[in-house]
Image (cartoon, rainbow, N blue to C red; front, side, top):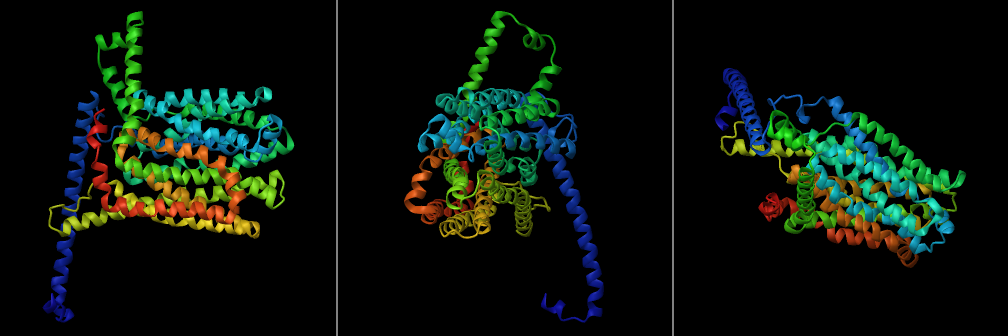
Length: 536
């Protein structure tokens, strides 16, 4: 190497040309090897599908495979799923600005008023279990439709008769149906997009939903100030009815196991067709027995994933803590502006725009950053493999969930920074824009962190992503129910500065070690209990 570098340019001219020629030839060889390897992998994948489901796609480019659908179709389906999730988040926050009026008319004390607000999150904790189970048994589309109908019914009943019991029960039952938005949005996008595009797919699905934290309180402030608060529930039901009609017309089944099982059944004759169409009492009884047997297995899967997979303990605890703090802030944000800054309900609700700005930045920009990091880490590992002489031939290694870990770090830093910023600026009564920036930084960090954990889980569990996310959300939504209940006592005792500082310090202690833990030992943690949950 040294001798070559000391030669004159003239002496080097021919070797350089030869090196360039050799490099071009090697690049062509690498591309050829990569194409052959990809073709072989695609054929092997099709054969695995045939063995598992009794049918497979007609080829790697089969247009019926959701991965091969046009970008336009994928985006439209993503937007519809996003609209459903928007209703979920809209309903969560729509009563925040009107909580005082609801408490007055229903004769609720402050703690019970907070329960009427946060019981919705308790419903979101338990709804994903049957929804995820049924979606992995019979597909995504039908359970999405039924769940939206259930939500419209119970949400419309909440204000009827100004009953305290019906309000609390109705919010809980409505949330069971509304949870379909959060439960299936990410799995449906996973059905249509490969791992390398995970961030982009989540950004598409998250484009509309995260306007909910801003739209909910704004609608709540307008309606409670200009009309009557029961119309909050009726307006949301009308919005979801429109979304439901659009979904019925546009949504197609995306879940590959269901599509291939249907293809296998359609290709059969005689006995399969008779079994599918017969309506005798015996066959009906056998059908329902089989249905509930499979439902039991599928509903137990999230619990098995949660209990037998240590990596889920880490994900669940951190997602739960981040979401609990977020809902605490969401439930008290309007009261800060009304009580401490003396603003009207409508003016106070406009500050929720800062929360949506933070979330939108996290999902739209952050999703693309996450894909870029994922791609660069795969390329780095490919270069290491090739440089080590392992015969990689330029082939990219399979992706792994640990490629999502670096994206957790900015979220883990921004979330406590935003809490400190928001809390102390509110306590010292700084200008409203300072408080709003702190709130935006907090929510951006919270959703970056959660987005990275969600992508990590989806990469690991793939086919059973809906069940895995249901397992994660049970603690998240339970803490989302519990945290707002003690929020008034927290801020009354410690004020906003030390109250938020306490939450930030708890998060720092529990969350800061997580990226390092998953980066160093994530692969070993994921291996623990894997066989036990894959064969249930």
